[in-house]
Length: 114
Image 1: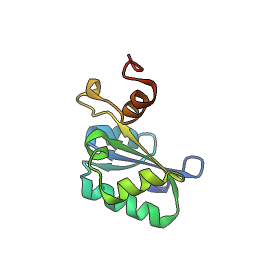
Image 2 (image 1 turned 120 degrees about the horizontal axis):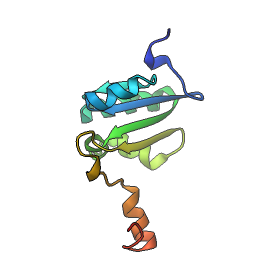
Image 3 (image 1 turned 45 degrees about the horizontal axis):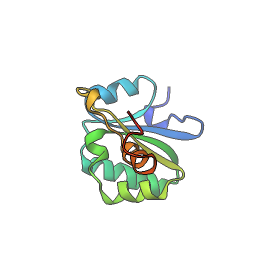
């Protein structure tokens, strides 16, 4: 059986960076996980991914998604073959407020998500 980092989902990599509890769950479905990652790890993984030319879905736990490093910002702005999205923190899912909420409120008004 190939290692998790070699698994592909429709030609793309599934990469999860976050706390060990969150990341371990994703490893069960074959995702490439980086448990207990820090912002520096996010930047390293994203730089390697950008340079590799691979397509990927990258899931970041909330604190990492808000770290805003240069590669994270660049890949979010570019869009395309690398899709980055945010996962709620495992111990406090009720506190999750994805960045897209702000965009929706700006476009549709402050009551749009109530």
